[in-house]
Amino acid sequence: MTTELPTTCGAAVRSSDGLGHDPVNHPKHYTAHPSGVECITVTEHLNFCLGNAMKYIWRAGEKGDALEDLRKARWYLDREIERRAKCPNEKVSDGSGH
Image 1 (cartoon, helix red, strand yellow):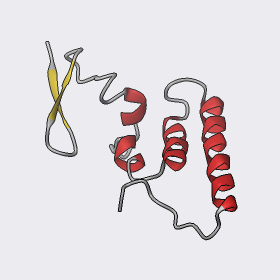
Image 2 (tube, helix red, strand yellow; image 1 turned 120 degrees about the horizontal axis):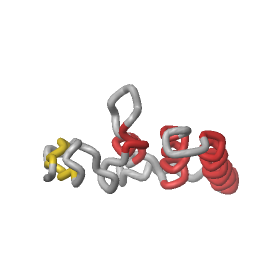
Image 3 (cartoon, one colour; image 1 turned 90 degrees about the vertical axis):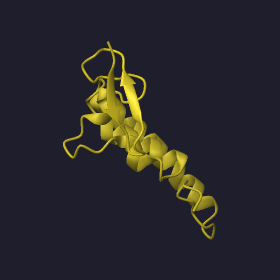
């Protein structure tokens, strides 16, 4: 049995477990935020490093070790800081193509 889940673009996504859980398209560790917002809704508007940092902060403790997730977020933040420090006059892209 499959369950259809709504998405931000209006298309439905099918859940394979019949309970609304879709580990491929909508993993619980990215949809469990109390706001009801899915992580990708925010991160798709950021560049790669900032999006990954946000992803690890968002899911901290939801998928495993919270400290490991926060260290991973810090790694991506440090990488983004280094990139921006090397090119301080570069216009920073948000990753959305705008």
